[in-house]
View (cartoon, rainbow, N blue to C red):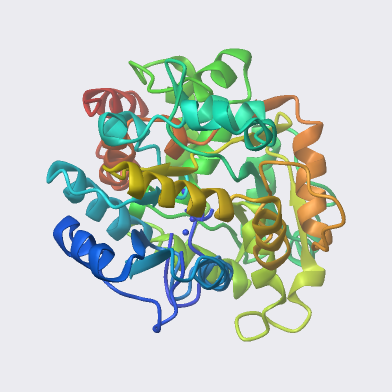
Length: 434
């Protein structure tokens, strides 16, 4: 999400999981009903309730979209189905809650993880959606092949895609100009040289973070890995069995240098929100993130009136872009009635209408082609860069083991202060595989 909305959250920021999950209006919010409560409610009213916890609430980028869509679903299916929402602000809080519910065999009816790959952990308790798509060929035909591939395991589909993951990095043209930088760098050596120019002008080059899997930092590292053919293959490998390879180690060495020389003092231990705010406040010149961030460039309660005019998007050095499908909407209902209701909800939330609204309201790139959408130019610029990238990669939250994603936040501070070497960083990630 988020993914990305693998979007992560604070009062002034966009969620990465971002990405980039359900209604957050106070009138609709409630804790998911237990199976016994749901059966009782259904028996007495005839309405089938769908439990749906979400981290798309509060300041998350897709809060308004999800609130509107859930309200529309509940109105359309009034008297038949009702989505009951639980707000869980913050990506990591949400993921931790799902892990607890999984261990207790008490997963909610509908799950969308905003880019975090929990399919491999939870697929034994998720509904295989393949037969339902086979019965509804029109719905099946609307899904992209790359989206289906990311959400499938061994020929079984465990989630419905609705987002195309397209990520480069954003930079402040005015700050680049102050440092004498005329165009985005083409190599990582040139990137570091530009960082030195920014520093010489008194400008901190890059927004970075370590908490909640270090979203911005990990995007940089993944792009560094993906600049070679072997690295591109690694970044598109689901659940790699080792992180000890030259591409990862060399990328970790660059990240170590960036922590020590090119970022803010609050990067170590900091979360995504702080990294985003530093970019919004022009304390940094560069941030790695997806187009769901673009709407914030126009939000004058956060940024200066002319901020959006200063921002451009670039591919990572080596012409690398994140360009892939993303983990989507899963169902964990346990009865045929609940599955039928959940299918209706997931189909509604991933419909062309819903995806078009998500694109226009939140700059979230849809899984399918949408005609006639009114979007910010920077969003189209990002998509255009992805379409012509030399190396297309998937993000770490979508493919790496959940235990490894968690371990990243443990190891980044150690890498930053020199307590471990890049080789030891790669070994630690390998050791975290479970």
